[in-house]
Length: 59
Image (cartoon, rainbow, N blue to C red; front, side, top):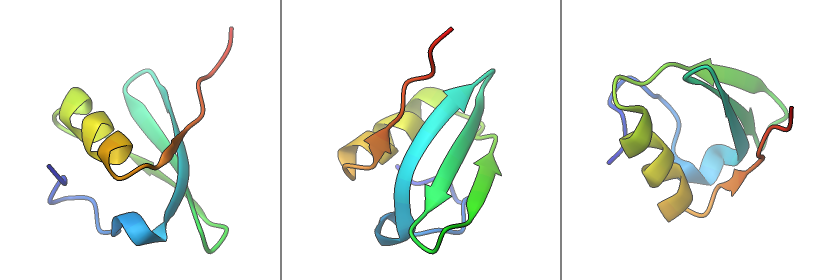
């Protein structure tokens, strides 16, 4: 389920990470954008279903 407040299509996305509920997303054009979805789990599932690379952050 795509978040209606997120203006990018899966084809524009390269990779993402999540920290404190904020998604940090790398676009294929080189830009980095941030997104705070209302439903974090649904947004993450949508990214993974679209095979967007998940970059797990390490402590």
